Image 1 (cartoon, rainbow, N blue to C red):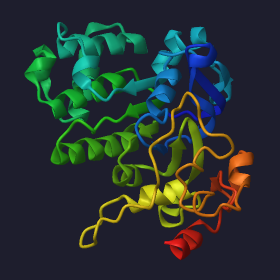
Image 2 (image 1 turned 135 degrees about the vertical axis):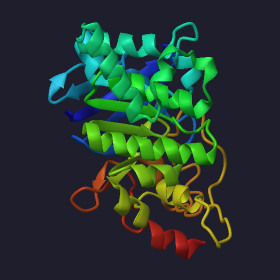
Image 3 (image 1 turned 180 degrees about the vertical axis):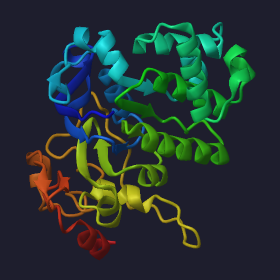
Length: 328
C-alpha cells in the first residue's frame, strides 16, 4: 500500500531573532503514490532538515504536511503510532540509528509490534521475511550491529523500516558512506523493494547520478527552497534553472573532461540569504555577468511552469541553456 505525501509552503526554522536560521523556506512538493521523488542539492541546503521535519524530529513553523490529504503538520500528530507506522525513515549512518545493545531480531521485533502484530510466531515469520527481502538470513536475528559491515547494517536499517509496513519511506543519503559496489547493491535492493511493497519514496541525496537512477521525479533545492522540479528524464535532459544546469555540468562523464559549471563564489550564509533570487550571487547568467539584470536582485522569482509537469524559479527560465552556452 502507498500514500501520497504532500508538502505545502513548509517552513522549518532553528533559533529565533537575528540569529535564526530558516533551513526550509516555503517548500512545496508531492511524492506520488508508489513513486520515488528525488531531492538533490548541495550540503547545507536543507534536505536533511526537511526529512527530519517529516518524521517529527524538528518542529514545523508553518505550512502543511499532508498524507493522502490528511493534515499531520503538528508535532503531536507526527508523533502518533499511526503516523510513525505509515511514514518511516532510513538515516545516513545505520550504526548510529541502530541500538548497539539490541540484537537485530529484537530491533525488527519492536518495529513489527508497531505494525500491530503481537503473536510470537507471526512476528518471527515476518522478521525472517524482512531479512530475506534485504538479502540477510535467519542467523542475523541473534547478532548485534557491530558484527555486520556498513552495507549489511544499512540493509538491516531498511528491513527494520519496512517491518513497520510503511506507506512512505524517506531515505537520507543512505549510500553516501558506502563503497561504490555496496552502493549499487543497496540502490538495486531499494528499487526491488519498492516494486514489491509499492511504497512511496522520498529519496534524498547529493549524488546526481544516483538520484537520476532512482527517481521518477526530481526536485532541486538551494538555500532552503525548491528552485526546480520535473520528471527525472526531463530535468536532467533540459534543466531550466541555472543552478540545476550547474549541477548537471558537475557530473563526471566517461571519456569526457570534467568541466565544472562557471559558478562564482561560495554558498551564501543561510542565516542571511541574498535578496531577490537567492542564486544571483553565483549565477552565470545573473547580474554578476549581466549588470542590467537587476530584477534578479530586486524580485524573488516565482515558480514558472515549463510544460505540464516542469516548474522552475528563474526570471529567465526557458533560455538558461542557450544563455549560459552563449556567455561561456
